[in-house]
Length: 339
Image (cartoon, rainbow, N blue to C red; front, top):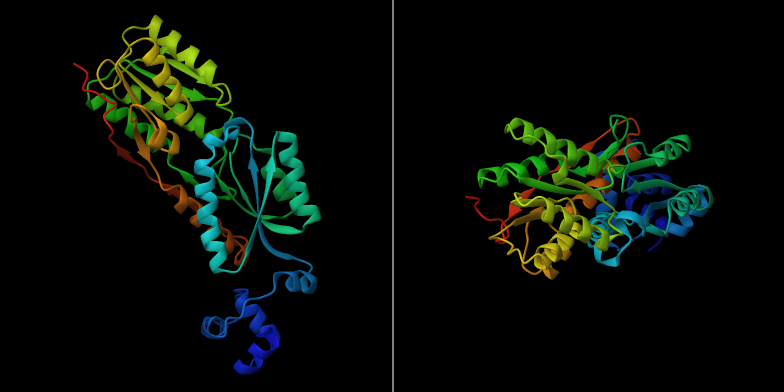
């Protein structure tokens, strides 16, 4: 069935049917529901290419997946594809396409956004890997693009985002260790240019202070995800020089695997001689040996929420929405009670 036939059955104009299916606010809720019900009944689906030709706009959401930096290894892309899966579920139900481009560098990433916006005329974008001061935000604002970010900037009041509660997650982890009598806690972070890494560090420092534990700079290190061997060396040397360290918080799965390797090298039994805790994902959930205690959060749900917010913004551009996902600890025996 085409839109002309559907409009005839509903005794409505083609324009009204089209706008009802597009979710426009100038069509009443009652009419929108009636149109969608009949569209479903007669298995009508708008032709996206015809819509582009008619309007000059594409009913597509753009997403650029960086395969460098924090996402350089395919082993570390599990969370991103869970997020994409969540987005896809929501987009499929709304008959909206998802256009994904890949970028191997920051320069390629900017070019990918230029291609989506200037060449493909895409007006809805989901961002990720947000930096403290993110130039992409300025670029999207300049071109008046409707967007939602997975993550926040340092000043995050002017745009919509979804994110893990990074501060709350680290506070939960640190308090969990302190309740088990750990006071010599090491922290392995990644580059603080990423806002989530900076948020986690600040939360760690605050929680130590709140519990009257002095921060020891020798117990803290920041490494790059694309340098697992360097992470291993840093953690190994940290443990050799600081024998009092009883536990390690790893800000990423990658550093958790490096910590396991360093502990095995030094013949420290995880869960007995030393404790490791990290953020959950396929690496520590399925591949780590021994299993590592971790905080889990709903990545797929973040993807769904991002699309819900994006589509709401398309109808109400001035509305800013945020969603913060909470965490829970999954115990797997890698954290011991410190005597």
